Image (cartoon, rainbow, N blue to C red):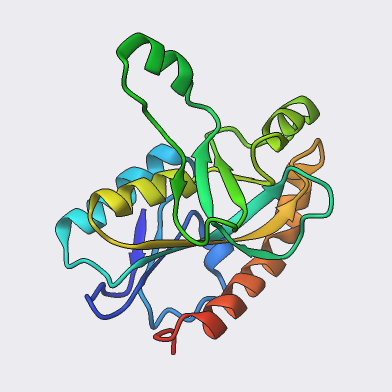
Amino acid sequence: MQLKGKITSDRPLLVLAVEEEAQYLDTRLPVLLTGMGKVNAATALASVLGRGPLPSEVVNLGTAGALRPGWHGTHVIGSVMQHDLDSDTLRTLTGVTYGAPLTIGDPDGPVLATGDSFISDEADRLRLAEHAPLVDMEGYAVATAARLAGVGVSMVKHVSDDADETAAKTWREAVGECAKALAHWAEHNIPTYA
């Protein structure tokens, strides 16, 4: 976890997993690098928000794999779900729903599936594509931590790969251009960015 800059109540906190995704951001806004995966994202953000002060909102920027053909570019996420939590079994055992999908933006926006696995297998890709067009490793955790702290959250993902057998190689090759696209989106869509 690394926090760059100072959090204030009048500005958003930009949250990304790794430096590679944040390399072109103007750091006049605070930037939190959480590390990859749901546990790192949740604990890093919860720790920062728990210390205060709270930002005006949390903006989660990052890369995502495309689970369906034709998905590329930058997307403002409408809802986020966990793909690696067996909510149905847990509900059967306890009567409580854990990990329900969260609406975080326009309900007509794309669904993001979050899980701790880097999706690079065709069978996993096809299974997840039934529920969402995009996949990442931190979004659901960021949204949950922000909500528990009472802070609004928005999420923007840029497609880095096709979540197939070439995903790891493609991500490494594409992350720089993805970082540029995310910085461009932030500059043109976050009023307090400059």
